[in-house]
Image (tube, rainbow over all chains, first blue to last red; front, side, top):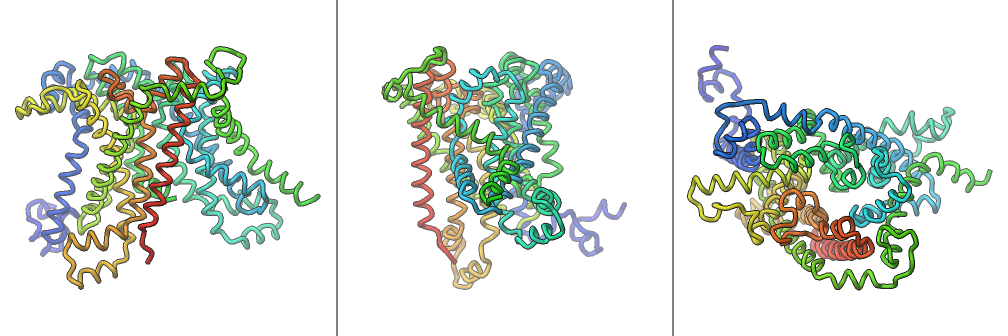
Length: 295
Length: 291
């Protein structure tokens, strides 16, 4: 390894050792690679600035927000973690998001299977109604929805959010699943029926396992949407201990506007869980977002 | 058992839960929303009576609504234009002969992981502290005071923040579009001696037209309904100059308790966005090339 540490790229190339991936290639491609990384650095500079400042005492942030932390401290994180009820909000958000996604994928795939496999007028009507509803933004439904939920005494319950996410997320899931199920040959269903499977068994043993890629796409699209959602939880959740991460970040920052240090830490804590997961599955996230957009 | 009864049974089992939730939330809210605009509903009274077009008249007479709509229109125009141009250029750069493509793509996408509330707060800090410090350090007059304190600059702060987030998302869609371009056509252009710019204008751009259609549609849909960034970055200020239409509707309904008027304005907004999107998609589709 002592050889690899010293030589330049050329020696490394002739001696059969590979230069770091980013330095290989001809000069032009190396220059544009470097250029794109420099642009990326400038592009994400705002986030880097917040990260840098989150390790500084508040006085140093106001003194010079551009300076790197000279007296690094984790105190901001400790403050924010306690006062924004980070763990509680994280659990609330995770429970709401995960249960919504599970319900959507479970019932959405069943619905799509039935709607595409059985030619029947009510099925066609349901499908097109769902597709049409995807054009309607939440803001159009929000006022009557909140009034009705209020009249029924259902506001204040966290689970009502899961129900609303299920209702508003299922059309996209049905649409994406339906596109995929249409490409699965009917012979597969028929073979399963001949082997004695009921319609439910056919779906769960034969069809559902084939839907894995679409399930992943839907899960990613929905997690990103629900995890960061603001309006619905803001309108429904009343008690502080019910707050999702977005709501507790908002509450914390709005009541500590002058404490820059803990504010920076709170913002980063709010983003952290998604970023950590993203690092591991970024390829899937990007493919999922593209697939969702191109539908 | 007749076929219809068997189908109905299957429907209940397979589609029952989804359809029930979808109907009870989405369909009921939509229909109730239309009905309520024709009543005197104020959110408090238990009895509703028919009010004709009163809510629509009140909505149309609300000059703040039209001001916020005009402001939102201007915002959407700049956000859609800037985010698409920048995203296309980035995608071009990332589609060339470069290393570390996966890493770069992942990096450029990261702003999309940030929710609107946090996004607004981050840029609030950038505009009130970060850029002011940069202005002082470099002696730049334009950055010496916070952009959020002046109505015209607060508008641009909002545009920049939204573009920043949207660019990462649109870039990956343009990259996906560019990667499907037929290589033989591009090579033919090279052999015919087309220079970089000519090739871009006459070959690449027409071929990525479908991606442009999608990206403009997505950017428009997202930016018309912007609410959370608006709330945490400018909160409509200074002096209500950056109150966008989604925020106006929210305030009308939940702060001033004028539910009927607020809902009428929400429906108007929806109609406007639907018509603009339909026109955009059909115009843009017309220019697409089939190979």
